[in-house]
Amino acid sequence: MSPRSCISFLAIFVATSGVGGLAAEPWQSADRMTESASTLIASLDAGQREKVVFSLSDDGRTVWSNLPIAMAPTPGLLMADMNDTQRKAVHDLLRASLSSQGYAKFTSVMRLEEILREIEAPGRESLAGDPEGARRLYVLESRGYANYAIALYGNPGSGDWGWKIAGHHAAMNFTVAEGRVGFTPTFLGSSPMVIESGQYAGLAALPHEGERGIELMRSLNAEQQQLATLASEVTDNIFEGPGRKASLSKYEGLKADSLNGSQVRLLHALVDEYVRNADFDAAEAHLAAIEAAGWDQLWFSWRGPIDPAGRFYYRVHGPRILIEYNRQDENHDHMIVRDPQNDYGEDWLGQHYEEHHPTMEEAIENAQRGVDALDATP
Image (cartoon, one colour):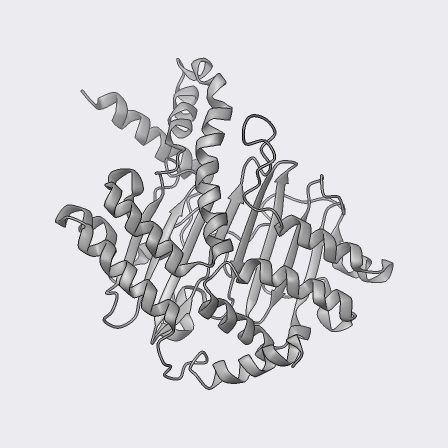
């Protein structure tokens, strides 16, 4: 059986197993996630539990950001405020929710926070003495492996539920509904994208996201590249982050029905790079949903130079997938994967969530409040 036939078979299997809204047998991923989440909750004391467990309809479920936690606080309990047993339980939940590649990427991004703080450390002394410097120092000190907030929504093991982990450059939202698992929105970023010096020189947390886009773009002929390319440079605020869910009103660029066989293969590899960050049940079901909607209904668009060392942006967009990659600068990137139909499990749960994201002015105010709170501490 060919790979495309396997995907088509999976699409039929998933469609009859409940991804479209019918009742389904619990997936192994859902069982493991439920068990891990229950273990985490049991390890918390009463005060911690109040910071972690919310109702499934709570508005805080969609509060997340790519900004440091000091600038964009998110509901939940920081790993910094947990003991070792509780941190192990969080990692067990991450492993239950993610594939090996997804877990490696997420934890590498968390580890980068420690490295980024050390990279920026030499400038700390110069920041003291003025309000702006104090805010920057506060944000710098908030970087760290433990400054990620965990929140659970609903009751694992009793009806539908979800969970979220969010902090600087990393946010993942999971939904378990009638045994099915959703994993969007997922956001990851890396800075530095590749560590340039020291014992970790050469390490990259997101090693293939940019490369997969370059590969597909280079495979296109001149006419296809012209259709895909919307701008010679990347503009600010193009990225589909939190709070901009409805900003993409139409498809753009090059439609996948004009790709040849080798180009389709590269498109599949690109989509796999994002979707297969989730554990196998959720990943395969999402790929089946893309297949059911039609791979030829995907659109690919590009902004910027076709240069692995340059600043560029690409988008893959269709009825059941939105992927964006944004090279912020030569050594800093962001990526996001969304499901236009079922982010936060909205289609399964039959409810709509309004996303929230602070403006830069609000983010600066949040940091200033943190500085003021430290100054007021005896």
